[in-house]
Amino acid sequence: MAESIVAANSGDYGLNASVFSGSISRARRVADALNVGGVNINEGYHATFGSVDAPMGGTKQSGLGRRNGREGLLRFVEPRTVAKATGLITLPGAGSEFARLVGAMIAVLVALKSIRRR
Image 1 (tube, rainbow, N blue to C red):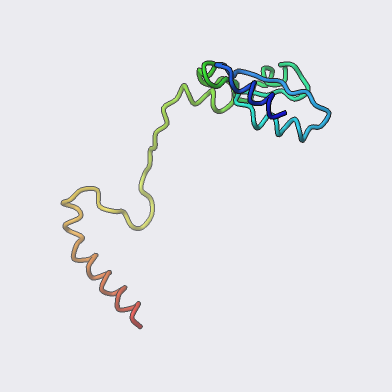
Image 2 (cartoon, rainbow, N blue to C red):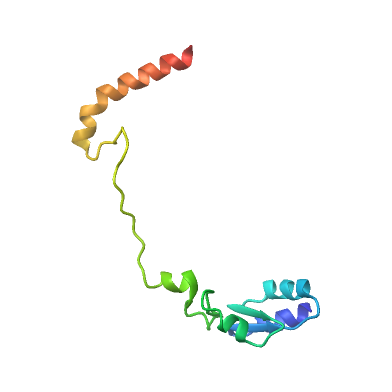
């Protein structure tokens, strides 16, 4: 079995593989060891290629990204964060705003320090 895995992983491409076995647990161990984008167990190709909600793509020279599923969609978007401050305390946004709060911040720190000593 190990020799077969080494032979399968030694190629330049890694789009898809199929593992046929009477033992599903053995087939899954082999599948985990293969360096390919998709592995079919006890089936030629339809299980991975027919899954529209699972990522499909290869590794090595077959690895041109993923299609289908969340991974396929993410190549078309650029994530970003948009946030609005909510709550009672908003941190200063600029140095001039921070300078106005220095006295209050020192007073809070002194109070916290005295509470900790008790």
